[in-house]
Length: 218
Image (cartoon, rainbow, N blue to C red):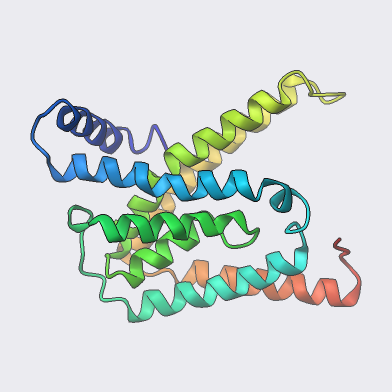
C-alpha cells in the first residue's frame, strides 16, 4: 500500500503537515485528519477486546456468518448507493462512520476493506473513491498491527526460522501489490459483484463443511 499509494500518501502528508504549521487547510490536509480520526476506533476497540478477538471470536461459524452478512451488505450498498461523491467531499461525519466501519474488521470474517467500502458506498462515494480511501485508511492501522505483532514475536520463530518467514513476507508483498492493482481496475470499470459472490460462496462452503463435520471449530 505504501508503494502503490506513495503519491497520494505524500501529497496528504505534506498538506497535513503544512496545515499543522498554519498553512492552507486544503482537502488533502482534511483527508489526513480524517485518516487519523478513522484509525482511532480500531486501535481503541482492538486494545479493549484484544482477549476476545484472539480467543472467543475465532470461531469459524462467526467467520462464515460475517462473510455472508457483509457480502450481502456490500451488494446492497453497491446496488443502491448513488456513487457520486469524491474523496475531497469527505467530511467529519464520514470520517467517523468509516472509522467505525473499519473497526468492525476486529470480528473475523468482516474484512477491513469490505466494511469500509460498504460504508463508503452507503455514504454515496464512488466505487473507486470508496476503495482508495479504504486502502489509505488501512495504512496506519495495518502498519501499527504489523509492528505490534513483529515486536511481540521477535526471536520466536521456533523451528521454522527467519528465512521462511522472510520468503513468505516477500510473496505476500508481491501478491498484495498485484491484488491492489487488479482490484482498483475491476471496481473502476465494473462492480463489486465478483467479490460479493466470493464472500457469499466461501461463507456457505464453510457452513456446509462445519455442518458435515469436515471442519471443526472451537
